[in-house]
Image (tube, rainbow, N blue to C red; front, side):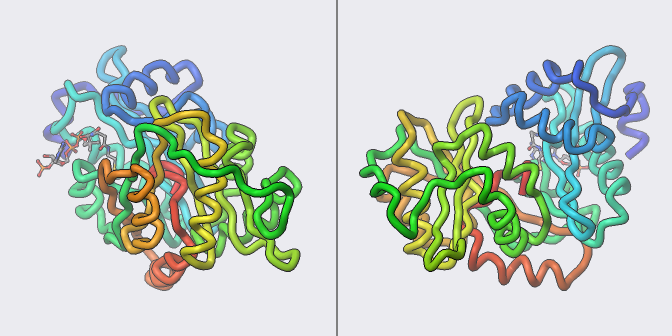
Length: 296
Ligand SMILES: CC(C)(COP(=O)(O)OP(=O)(O)OC[C@H]1O[C@@H](n2cnc3c(N)ncnc32)[C@H](O)[C@@H]1OP(=O)(O)O)[C@@H](O)C(=O)NCCC(=O)NCCS
């Protein structure tokens, strides 16, 4: 790739807080839903894990990484300014972040159709498809019953138990992400606690264009629907999105009957350790909505 980008005088460096406006401009050009809070979550988790590419003084590309414990790392926010696409910049950034994460046995990401070719060349393999489902307005759903078991609002004191369940479903530790989502959208945070032990939960966060519900971890379709219904019932208006693994047909049909349509598709891809990939496939049984392509 150096040939294509070589003529550009490309300069790669770590992202700083002062780059947030440029980072937001790039994600807006791509029509993505993230807010500055999402970027700050990446920057706060590891400032040296976020990169920008500059041509002259212009920031033309970004990439972010997050270490989710010792075994799994995640890549997100790979964005190239439309004026500078197809010149090898996306590939170069992906190579840099993958290289940086070499110590992790598994690296994951959700690829867009545009990004997929880059990651396939680097050895990533698709594990399953994820569909972004979107409703223009939050559907009207009856408020969940009061403080009755097993559906309960999720609070800060529940985070450790939730993070442990999330680790089983997702394959990595991302408690800071869960904590941040809870702080930003407590109304979307619910858990199922049958017999005093948490068996499922959902969280959400505000987006630039749509509120997003996810992650949603549950043991069965009917539990996933209960959690999604609780989170949706507290939304004032739309639009709202959920990123649902393709295989979760029960939840997708339930959402479809409430006005959700498929907006776009991602490919959940992994590089590395086969065992963890197999585990992630098995865990699809618990993962009914992912946190989002950038956070896994
Ligand atoms: C995906 C993206 C990052 C690629 O950046 P880039 O700098 O154009 O990538 P490269 O120049 O390294 O191109 C890599 C390959 O992808 C192809 N490609 C680039 N944009 C593409 C698009 N929109 N659709 C299909 N293929 C595309 C290129 O043709 C190239 O293939 P080639 O080497 O066989 O010609 C850029 O298109 C982008 O920012 N898209 C919007 C956000 C996005 O989808 N990000 C990816 C998240 S996984």
